[in-house]
Length: 77
Image (cartoon, rainbow, N blue to C red; front, side):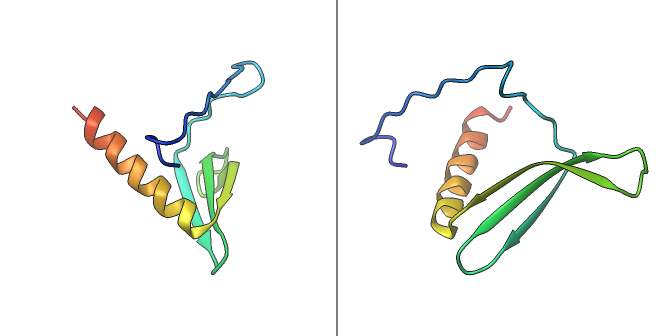
């Protein structure tokens, strides 16, 4: 999304949209889709429980990576 040309308002209801902590992640992809799997430790220490999955096109994933890098550079202490 181009921040200069588009403005979108995000509404987040904390009761319907929980914030989850991810201790691990797994990235899967093919030519059409990149899927991010976010996981937490399960009771068995050798296992991870996937708690959220997000899929996007490779172009969206590249844009997300650019925005994430920019955000971390601005707010890293």
